[in-house]
Length: 50
Image 1 (cartoon, rainbow, N blue to C red):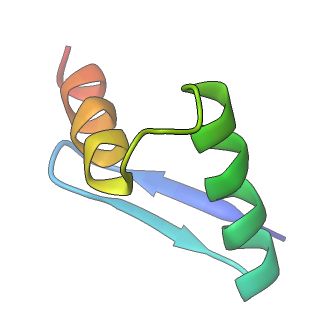
Image 2: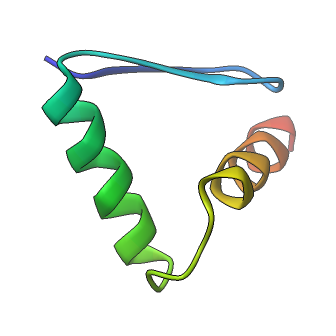
C-alpha cells in the first residue's frame, strides 16, 4: 500500500516500487506530461506551506 508523507521540506512516498512509479506517472500526466519531478516536488512543498 502506497503511503505519502509530506512536510514543507520533502515528500516521502513509501510502498512498492511499482506503486511509486505509478503515482509519479499519474502526477506527471495530471500536470501535462512535460513537468520535471523536481518542479513537481517544489510545487508541492509551496502548496503545503500555505
